[in-house]
Length: 620
Image (cartoon, rainbow, N blue to C red; front, top):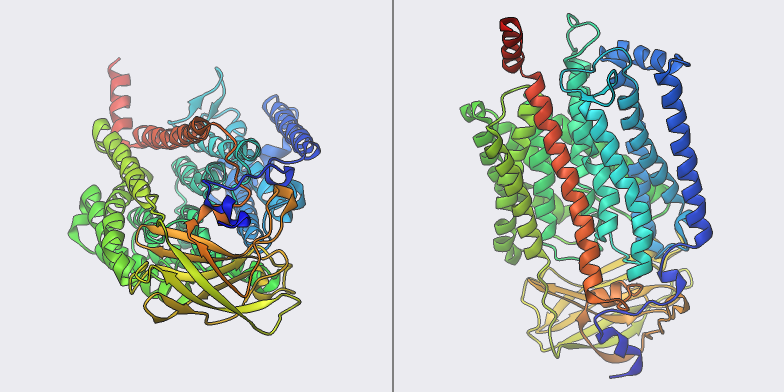
């Protein structure tokens, strides 16, 4: 094997340079000081408010509350949350596009998108803390958590602050992760999932906080109007967006995991959010939530793509699933919400996902081939049923209806987590073919913006390496862009055309010079593999150039070795497992906390439970 390819056959590419590791110490210190200053300011504000040395915070919250007929400890945190979560979402999509189009960051402060993410996550935490510190003389609802003898905090506010803190902790952990394992240039790095997951599930805490405030309104005789119904439907649209963040690599067409994950993730997001919204708010709410999600993601796609000049991204439509949910809500079975949620999840995971596949085929880089559907359904159906049951449980909480007995509801949550884990484990099963290679002949095309452009004629060996309908046989060129002045704005995907057994040709030119990383990718069922067409010399991680020769034959290797050159293998094998388990435990704690909070609120606000407690008090 040629020396420049030897590293590609190892388990990973060694990334010793500082550019492939953690942030520079001056940036770490700067961010730490900024976080300390913000935390000190928040604690000082809380002290002044709690000791009644200032009144403007309470006055501002109460004025906002009068507008929506909600207590100030709900109105001000939610108003701040809306602004901050949109800021964080913009920064997140922009950050992903920057990594796809231009590669890794010189440091966290060198990426403009990181400022939006940091500000968004800081204010997510602050919004939750405002809900905690604002109540002064009143107990904010019967579910409130006692902090001191006279200080109570709403459950939703405590949970919002907790998920905000969980997401913020992902930033320093991400730097530690890079120092240990090199940069994992993928959305699905464990610490990256903490960052986006915390923000994504924060909508559950917001919905719970709004519920607490709805039953503790300043004017109990003033009914909620149509505007507030629409606003609450938008909240479920926000939950749909939040649960969709895990799919964003698929939105750009640069997913580094098997395609079967795409419909599974769409099923999880849509069943939980849309079934909960429809059961809580009634007719039409699922459709309103989808329209809201479409408008927000559409605006972000236009801002980040055509206006800023980053790679194009699309997003799931969810309309087919929403239609299925609305139709299923017409069944009398809706009076048995858990059964209705599970059955609706089944319908969403089959008919709804088939309708979504029409949108995917028309808009996404990679559509779902017919050969993938048996495994697709084997993953979407269980998670759809579980997601539907969870959505119904959340809807029951937000309607103040009695939940199932504790063993059953806990069992449902645990089962849903285990089903999602099993589906994920199946999706992560990958085969790398042995003794497989490709003979590539490159033909120079007209240069574009100073980049060498080529078309390819590719012959696979063995010829039957892929089936007639694989997930993809493509050339991906990415991370070489400099904005609008580069072909494809830093991302070019060429779906190769088959002209014979194992023989494929280009459909458009791809760049093979400068900073571009150009690879041939194959996915067929469990087989996921790639080989380099061109990789630049990268002194920052001590990686040599892999040239784009006129003719060459190269072996297929594990795809991660060419897509994530910055990753390091210079660590004990057990360390990665332990680090991943730490992140997993943190995530399970957050899920458990949200489940506990929802159950606490449901028990405290149910009319039958309150009546029984009043009767017991009278008997005493």
